[in-house]
Image (cartoon, rainbow, N blue to C red; front, side, top):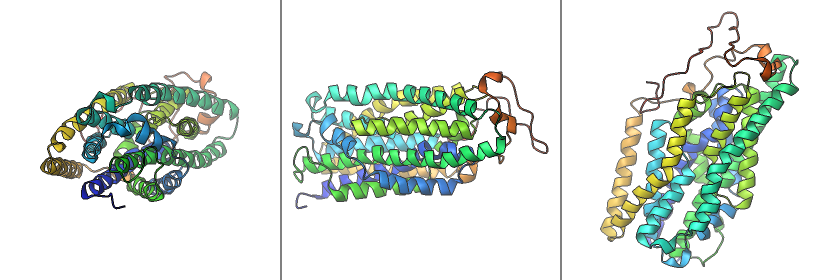
Length: 414
């Protein structure tokens, strides 16, 4: 530990701060559908997700190794201030998209930050572009499609198998299944995303000479990264939970179960192979597949387009901010202090702005206990026309049939 200088300590703390933002930014991945269908109460959902994120952090280090020794060339002369700049770019993008209620990829924000800062601080030889293509870009394009197709098939199978069953008992069964499937998504998220911070801290320690090249993350790094992402998850990213759970598609319990099961399969498989994919994109693809496979066969494409646009901007935007931060930080201690001041000021400003129109857990739960009728579960999707609307239950207001207004700058409907 004699190699842990003040700057290295600052970088480690900043990495854990990124891990915290990753937690509340990506809580929606695991729990948005379960909250939207009423399978779990919001606070119970984020508590379960936090515990399982921490547990998942101990299951593998393959993704951490992809970051610490795969994307960046450890022997290229990467210095702690470069990693600090990369984290600044990732954190600011996470906070900006959280403020807008857009489920962007924390993973790609981190990758973009590392690439942009390394290109400025070291040069092109500091980035393994072949690894970027094979373990980041290709999975980014393929994973939401794979999850969407799997979720679509699982949704149709769920409705077909339960055709003719009693609606309420079937719904309860799927809600119970959602608790299990959402828990697996949270576990998979911890296995994949907590490792990214482990990889960054490990890369920092290697650059400072505290660890040898190719070393695995020490136990204290694994534990601290797991605790940071768990704490962030427990805080709950209610803006993004609302967008994913209620803004993208109207889903019932069978669809939620199918989306979560499909996402879990893709994330765990990718973690085992060392692919640093975006759990946000995987889970969003699962929700879209479930929406298209359900009785109404619909997705709010205006919301989906905004999400996809955000995904495309994430890596280059974070890279651009990190590149500028790296240039400033490379000027010396005053440069590092200036970058840190901007980070703290911008983060505080976005948080204060978010308080003007806060989103609390009540804004993510279903507006009604469950306005669907027994026939919603019992009828196979093929038997229902896309424009057909089920009559509202007695004593309740009819469900809206029009697409809701787009979200405004703060994530509130305009």
